[in-house]
Image 1: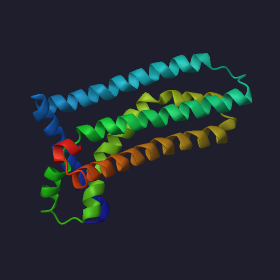
Image 2: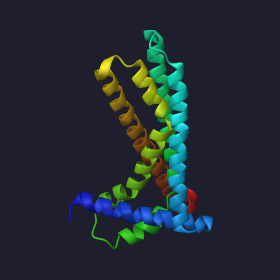
Image 3: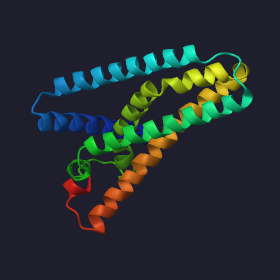
Image 4: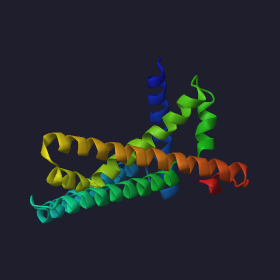
Length: 192
């Protein structure tokens, strides 16, 4: 089994454990949790699309260069902030690493593959929710872009910004969680 397949297997196990943990905490079924997460994604997409439509109607083609640059910077900053907030919410709701780590120690995967696999569901859900909620940035890039090359470059920069914001936020959250457990000696449930 290749490393990528092992990471995928750990990610799938982590997602199942996460779903069960949320269902247990809310006193409901895993099916209800999946439906709720899907409904939340659809609502986030609808909210993002409605904001994008409003933003698209407000932007005209004759935007001055100074204002164009400011609009792109502001929309990218809002996208990074939104991605960070989504990542924090997902990290807080993810199951404790200790319960999953005990299970993963029994499997033939390395520590790096196990840790990356645990983060895959958080990053994937974060990317989907963040992209849905920050679709106004796409409209700003398309409306203020200079030609197809500039628009493509802006969209790639937007996608990379979301991914970097999510990875940095999840990484900082993991560092703070580890520091809380080891230096301050917080119990695992309180460190998360």
